[in-house]
Image (cartoon, rainbow, N blue to C red; front, side):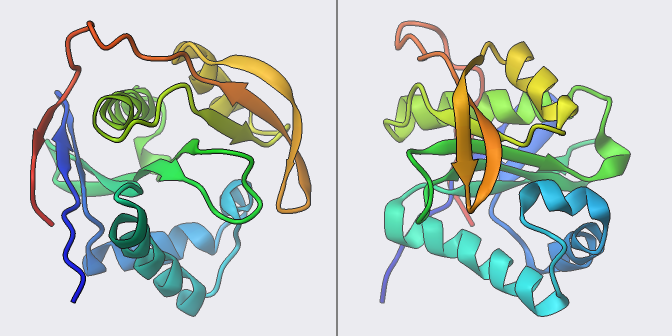
Length: 183
């Protein structure tokens, strides 16, 4: 039996945690919308379930992956953030998605910053990229706010996109998050 731990990372307003089965309804609703086309959607209920299971697979196989985001004040599932490296990817990517009702509050920035910081310090994934669809102006603005810079045109899964490079995290800087282990 394979054993692994998905670390829990906390910020001021968020908890980055392992996926939960009760996240499925919100995920399924998201992947039924046109907004999901930026991250591989729309998807059927079965495909969303398989995507949820795949998130555990990343952590089990590679020791890194994506976290689901909980907003502390409401205890609500707000989206996901983390590292992706699958067939078709040039290198490790920091990706993020927020449910629509959580946009515009700086939560994506807080989550992406925490995931990037944790991944650089604990997973040796530093100076990663983000693939951003040309039409996704919100993600481009977030990448810029995170200090990422446009690197080049790219392609992901047969679709043109932009590749943005995140800055390396100096190991001497204080950590931005706290961690606790658990699933």
